[in-house]
Length: 71
Image (cartoon, rainbow, N blue to C red; front, side, top):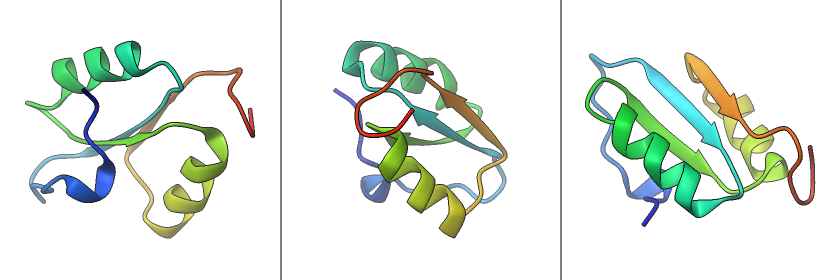
């Protein structure tokens, strides 16, 4: 299961990665693999991601290209 970004605790010593992915299985895999080294934020579509990323810029964005609502 993918954790929602505002339910996660950030470690300020780690860089932040935003995952923008509409496939829960892929997002969950990426989050599991990256969460030991990075703060990971998950967004289910581009529209939600854009608004949140502009508020708090991550160090890296990993994004699906074709997504619902906004590519």
